[in-house]
Length: 474
Image (cartoon, rainbow, N blue to C red; front, side, top):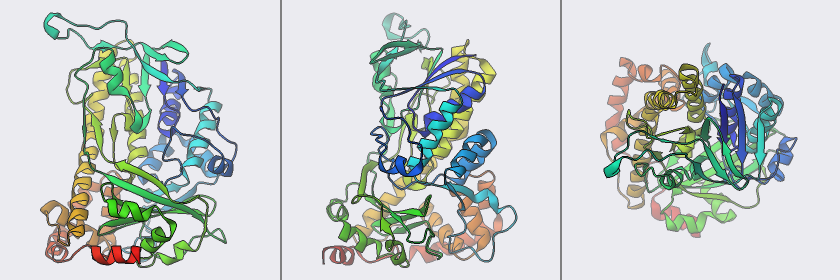
């Protein structure tokens, strides 16, 4: 069994630690934030200081695929989350394309709705109960490497090997370091500091800004309607996400470089006016706000490190999990599901190779990363690219036409009219097994093709850009 240091005690790091500890590995989690997890959901929401998790009080909903994997491999954690108030919900239920009751088998579309603070606090207590050491107030300053592995002329005879981390409390050694520090990971800089110059990353550059607010309903129940969870509305998007204990969030999404909307949406009055532009959204503004003002998070884009792009291992003794490897835009909600799948890939690679063969371990993990997650990342970057282009075009008063995006929009329209198409579309969005085959079914594929001309003749739903700005500034 291996001695493992997991960097980061957010949910991605904790679920990875739980998986590895269940296999008998000696796991320690290093966390720079000082505060321990509160004992209840409301304390976690109102008093827990977690500067290392900037999205702690932003809109959040795990994919159905995350719940499938968690129930199969972390059933105890799922039970504790439910006991703490996380609400089991079916992501089909609020969609306009749902006709009639849920069918047998639709439980695959279930997920757990909860504020991120509840998920994080419960997972922390679960990890501690499982005997995982969480060392707080530990600042990781870099990786520790016993050798450089350089040959004359700058070629490399073998990968750089890592055997620990340098921290604010000195060097801590381990058989394996697992970077779960998320979108703020300093891994490329750490690798450069130990001589690995090949480490690089790709980034979408442009991205989105979130403007979120949480509410609590007066009677503990949510408005009953078929208002979809996600609406994309010209220059704006809206997420409407249920959570725990009668709470829910509304989140407006704009381009990060949309300076006109950035100036307006940070204010409660104009934020509410923008929400009201979405038909059917009014009842959701009737709740009691449980956040102070509008919570803003900018620069949300896609980014991937190249650590596993080639068959040759670049570095051994350290792996990057989840957002430390590849960040995807939160709009599509894939972060937790991808992180859990990535943690399972590491667990399985360790079962296959053990920690005593570090090159074999990283090679097996890299192959699993590319086979299981690289395609999802590429799909997400395509969404980001097209959605930003559509928002640009709407701001200029122009239609946006691209064959791939037209088919995405045609599928969304078909999903509002056909319950089978809705299930295929939701299965793909939630990364469920068999989704791609369902989308390629002749009936759905042909119907999407027939709808392409219709969606290409329409501007995105909602007011023209000038009308939008006039509404918000009036």
